[in-house]
Image 1 (cartoon, rainbow, N blue to C red):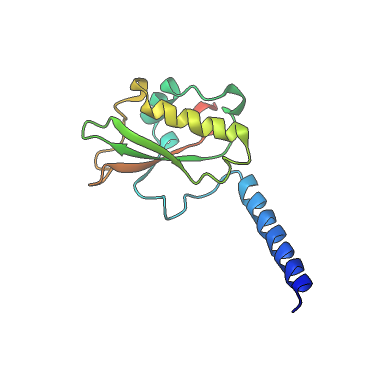
Image 2 (tube, rainbow, N blue to C red):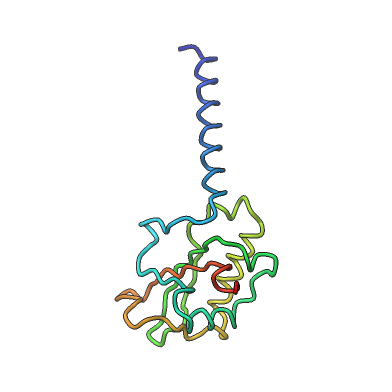
Length: 143
């Protein structure tokens, strides 16, 4: 294989990887990858929890009806107040500024005093006090 052949092959591989990455980023609803799915709590599946988040999360109005998921790993104190919050599964954060603003606003809401203490099921956070909260703006703000 010549140097030119190798460069062509590398270029094709790069384009294929970018194309697959773009397809992944464009997919509106992805399941939580196993690596971040520990102690997952879906906000919209419980009316009380959904109402609490709706009251304290001021997500961007233009994205409040969009159907996609944001996953935030939250470490809780024993009184269920949030110690840390970190957005995970962030493939869309570099490609979509609207979704990035939704993810950042969800994180900020969880850290605010208005959202604390969180209404999560007993034992949901496990021994580590860690859960993955899954937010879907359409399910939280949509009617």
